[in-house]
Length: 230
Image (cartoon, rainbow, N blue to C red; front, side):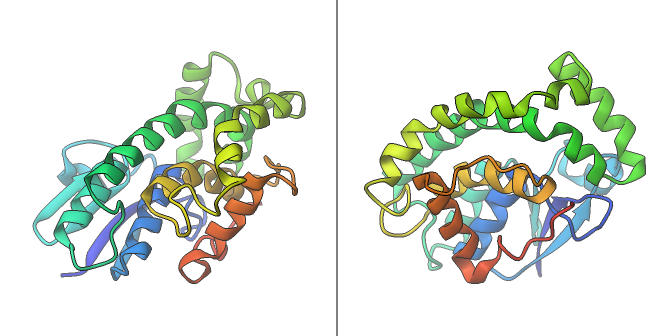
């Protein structure tokens, strides 16, 4: 049976912007696994009810159903051991788990605050009310007010990338000479912003920018070819 990935979509079904779904899309490409991506929107709750929860990514592979991006990565690593490894072994998996937690805790909030209103503009009409209510409750202000002043916050955000920058001055990817799942964990946040907003998070001469460019070109340019919503 075809592997199916339920993937967050905007008003245009071709616009796929979830950072967590991008982690999985890069992982599937890394392992060379043929799959079908199913567009899913915030209000399509019934479409993934079979997963027992209400968020994407959701991966269905035969009778197996897995949610949560890191759990999906672990699942396909074990289910397809002959395909290129996402982790390079148990130690690499442990390091990737740390990078995933760091990226979720350190990158997603600041990146989200700089593109929230841009995301809403890319959504289907049916999703906009849900998105506005849920995100304004999370951030404690209107989408417009949260996003306002992002130019002034940008230097602090760029400074927070120092751990990435110092590593990427010495090697092309977090994993070394070639990317693995640790890279995709951090890349998801940048691809999220790139898909929904023209606001540039990175300076051209930043090693993090060069790393992002290399990942955009990875796996046949999968991420670079992604539709953008602006």
